[in-house]
Image (cartoon, helix red, strand yellow):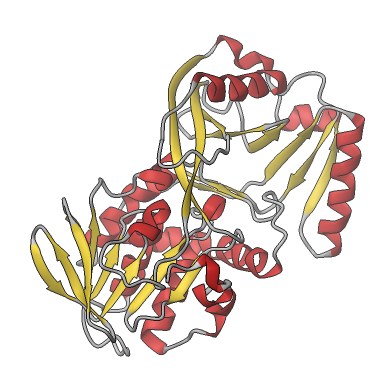
Length: 376
């Protein structure tokens, strides 16, 4: 790797962001180790629904929306590289996302949104009731219409995690399951990783710890990103294959189909510390919303309920780039868009380490925040 890294790279956190970054760097010839206390591809990477919809998310920040759109455009090539390397198919579907309206007022809002999206060159179309039911017959007969945003979609995030583990192994990345871990550094720069397996030197360390990014041991004050957990609850219903054909938003919930017929329903949002458990109230809210939008789901089996911790930040933007400590980088705080932003985050970090290309990272560096947010 012809790079300014000049040594081994340590990635702390084996979620999708960490694994993809390790894979990208290894593809370029770097020697990479990934460290995690848990099984790779878990936490928010495992708990999400895999929705890929920058316009669907209603992102208000221009820089973040542009980053999400860029990452969506990268997804087909990214998935193909991962699949070719590790022989696991993450099941990418970019057949559009449906926003169903059940009142005339909501349909009017969607028409106005379609006009705004069209003015920006985003491909979309408004569907009437009959067209909506042809597209998604399982929706309630009371549906008034829908907005279909083309080019968006979903990926099976759990399969993507397995695919990245396999792809990393194929590219020589070592994934270390450790019981304890801390960054070691001197007053100027990082030195490496100290774990229960001993000390391993590294010229660059990447904090990709997700919701735990602010708790990485050994990092000096002022170099920890102010990331906090935001719980989201979800459930899965065993539906026939093809019962839903697109990722679909109904009132207060979304439904994302899997190729095996499972239908994921999410998601709540709650700041509850590091508690990650599904609750009766949360699951009730999701079921109520899903059954209102698609009553035919009532007879199917609820096969799984779970909760995950999204990594939130004070301003809603992720942290991607260098920290004040030389050699210490951060790739965390992606909140609802971690799965969507996986390819572009990996590319940006790898470009910065290999070529010193940091200009694209400017809106997402820790230095954008006021001093009171950073530990000092």
